[in-house]
Image (cartoon, rainbow, N blue to C red; front, side):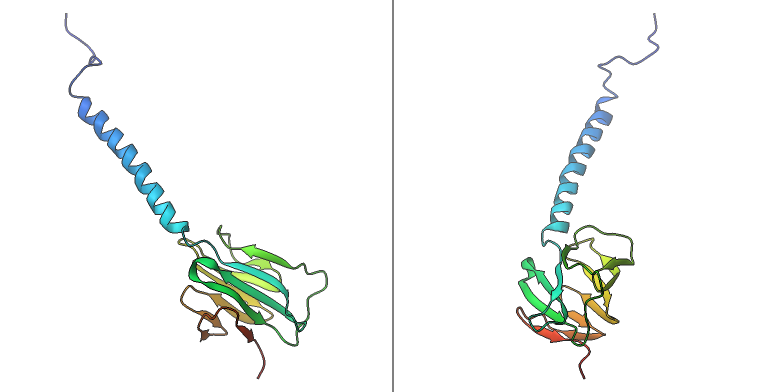
Length: 153
């Protein structure tokens, strides 16, 4: 009597099953490695607050890059009524533009953290890049604890 279907021990299926198992294990290992590389440096942390002298300011931190306490101060500006002060961490991408205190986030690429985040705050373009801080298209080297006053001539 002829067999109409392969038996469980059909040797022709073993290479396909083995290849499938290798693919699943390989996918899991590579996914984990890529995800670790993607998030290992952590996100930008930006605090929207007042500077010590009173005007609005942002304080930028990125611990993995050794960036701490970089202030961008907006002299001559005041907090909009009802504006809440906050610390935001730019880990999860969102559709842009979206509102942040003092303005909008207009670009965000967090594929590999910390990534690039761009704001328009009080009419000034602020870009956070791992290599450099860009304010109104002028590069400023990252220097922890520094304070940059924007809009002063």
